[in-house]
Image 1 (cartoon, rainbow, N blue to C red):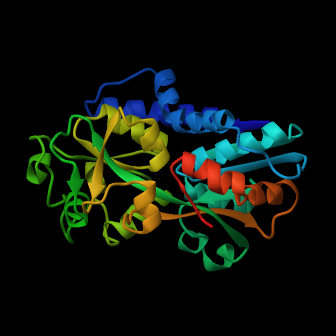
Image 2: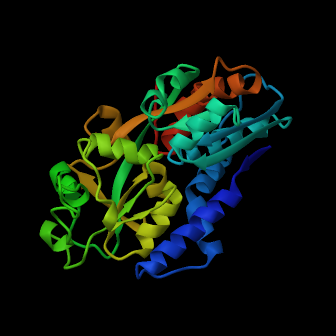
Length: 318
C-alpha cells in the first residue's frame, strides 16, 4: 500500500487560494485547488500503473515514510505505487513539505527517507549533514512559467530574470516590474516565491539569479510545486518556477518560458544545454536497511531508470 499526504496537499491548496484571492486573482474551491495541487503526482502514479512498470526483483515487507521535495514527489509516488503493487505487504507513504523539511525530518528520525533538490550540506549544519547518506536517483529540471495572460514573452535571459526577481543593493524593488519591459503586455509582474526551506528556490537562486536575494515584497510565498502551479494559473501577471513533471501535467494552465533561448525539456537537460536542473537526492540517516534499502535499490533499477523516469520527464542518473 502507498499513501500520500492528502491533508497537507489540501492545506497548501487552500493557502494558495487565499493568497491569490487577496492579490486580485480568481479563486476556486478548496477541493478544486487540492485536485490541481495533486494532479502531477496522481498523473504520475496512474502512468506507472498504466505503463506496466515492473516491480522489484525481491519484495521486503514493512512500512516506510519518505518526505521532502515536491519536485521529486511525482516520481517517488509513482515508483512507490509500482513497488507496492508488486509487494502488497509493504507500505510506502510519500509526503511533500519541501527539501528542507525532508532533510530535517530524516535527521530527526521522523521519516526513513528525506527527499531533496539540494545537498544536505547546503541546508544543514556540517555535523548534522555528516549523519546522512546521499542517494542520487535522478536528474530533474524546472521550467519558468507565467500566467497565460502574459502574451508575447516566450523566452527570457538569465539577466532579464535577475532584473525581474532580484533587488539591487539598497533597493526595495527589482529593476523590471512590468511585462511590457520584456516584450509582454502592460501588466505588473507578480513574483511567486517558495519559502527559504525550498530546494526549488535554492536551485533557481543559485543557477539563474547568481546568488542574488529575491525581492520578497513583491511576492506570494507558496510551499509546493502544486500550490505554485495553482497560484500562477490564477494570478494575472504572475511568474514562478515549477518542476518538469508539474508543467507537463498543467500545460494548459500556465505558459512555459525558455531560459537563455533554450527550452526546458528532458533532452536539453540531459545534454547539459538547459541549465535550470539539478540532481534528485534521497537521504537516509546512516546506511539504509530493510524496505528502505529495497525501495532505494528499486529506484536505481532498470524499470525505474529506463522506463518510469523518462516517462515522467526526469532524466536517468545512470
